[in-house]
Length: 233
Image 1 (cartoon, one colour):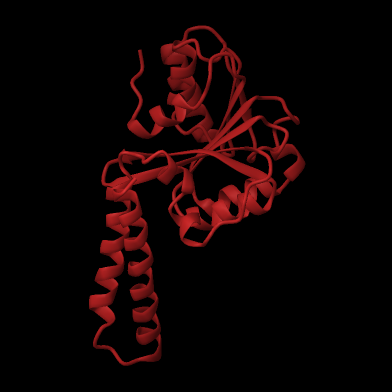
Image 2 (spheres, rainbow, N blue to C red):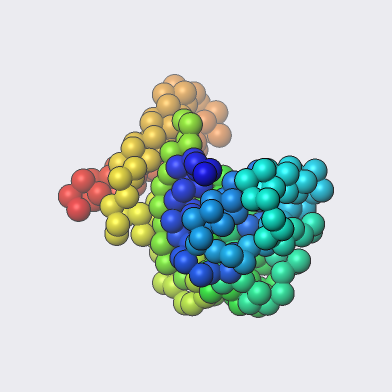
């Protein structure tokens, strides 16, 4: 029986029994193995843009599951899926801008799936804003530890969502609503980064340094306001 990392487990927890699943850029294939072994899904499409990682996923999956039970496809993003072919698409471990590119290539297809679980490595604020502005509703958000990092998992469904203040594209509003157990630590880490920038730029007189100092000062204020709100929830 395979054991998932906290990040992959949080993704798996968002998939319900009987859902048809596509794991886009499956990496080592651990999520599909778990979904099959736990009898969560018996219809799983495993994809990658490159042959080598797809073969690695295929080899790992066959090491756990002897019979041919999954559909392996070589190709880019959602292009190798038909509209509404699966209930849930998982796009994890990629940059936020790359995820935006994958979803935007065919918006109507992206919106044909009942649910998409995203785990961007960066540019999470830009991704959230793009999602809200392009017909996706943020249904759920979770945080998960992976080594020294705290990963963000964003589940979206087709639908209209409300525009937010910029700070809440960075600190997902669902994380606040659900008071995610890692939220306080997540915000404190962001504050620490900005305070280090303040130290580095405080006594510098260049135009860029002054601009960066004011930007980080404002960021610390915004983040501390959100942190105080979290502590009173």
